[in-house]
Length: 120
Image 1 (tube, rainbow, N blue to C red):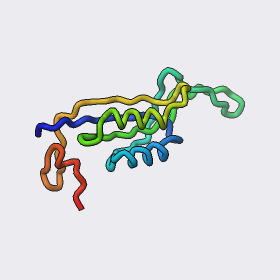
Image 2: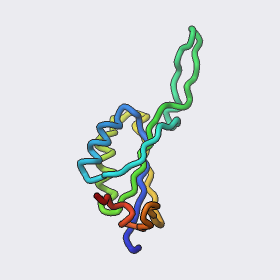
Image 3: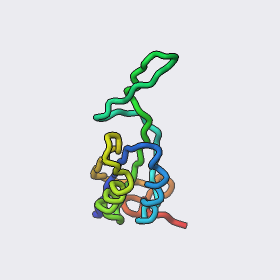
Image 4: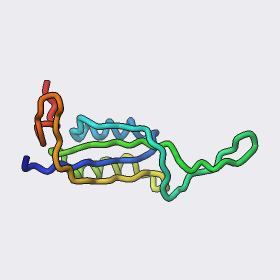
């Protein structure tokens, strides 16, 4: 297992997910894990009114996309995400990049790059 594996986590607004998923598919990203999450960053939430009373909503609905890449360049994934998600406003999201030590496909024991390859 000599090839480099990288995990990319993208946290952003749910409204941008479909557009991002399509753009990632166009650059060759075939697999991802998607979770609905709650969080806050610099925007620190917002106020909503319930029965006339102001309520601080500190945790906002976000979506987390987790991708592990070995063939598609990390820079390509990051630039694609930035292009789709950037509005210039607080709340656009964050991208986290991690080195991955190994990936193991449970069904057949394949490791590394082989574990990430789609087999028909």
